[in-house]
Image 1 (cartoon, helix red, strand yellow):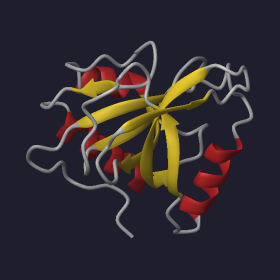
Image 2: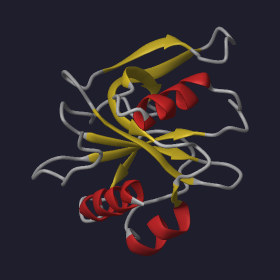
Image 3: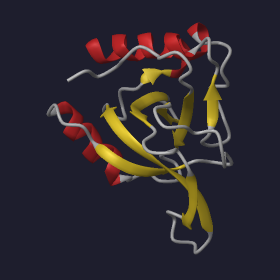
Length: 157
């Protein structure tokens, strides 16, 4: 199973974020990492799209960025299926508020304590904002091939 790939022409990349401070025992991340370690794809799961209402397209790449306390960095990758549309649903925290979501076909998730390090991303893919306030940050077009390469190297280790 291919764990990483080259960015395709016209393909965009986005960061979706997870901060264990606010969702410390998020079972999906651990389950997805265990599935990936067994050679299985984690499958489709919805993720908060942040303030981005539009712009996700079928085939766009997404990377799950662990934020907050160390270790910070990329812990997962996937692709936007279908038309990439977002929708409003109940907030994951049970507050009753609404939150915007996007579907992702997750391809690989690593142990959340072993991310592709944030400092490496900042140093080698410097056109992208690596400390966003939330999900939906677009990865600079020039940085996407660099991120794909770094991710592939991280998975190979």
